[in-house]
Image 1 (tube, one colour):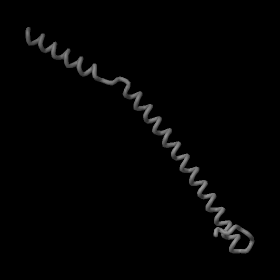
Image 2 (tube, rainbow, N blue to C red):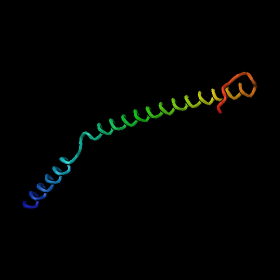
Image 3 (cartoon, rainbow, N blue to C red):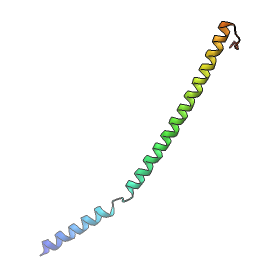
Image 4 (cartoon, rainbow, N blue to C red):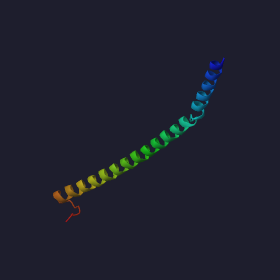
Length: 79
């Protein structure tokens, strides 16, 4: 009889210890963290695309000026 009571006491003690330490909101926090990371990545990607578009526009304008200078039809000299 003592072994049964001692065994039940140990089971209750272990189950209380393991259950009380569990974090129940971990999944919700993880989802919010992932959503924030995705939003930040999208903002970074948008900024990178905008920078690339601006650089491409500048390169095109520079190329047009070079062609105009070389053909004698105008353009601005970079010197």
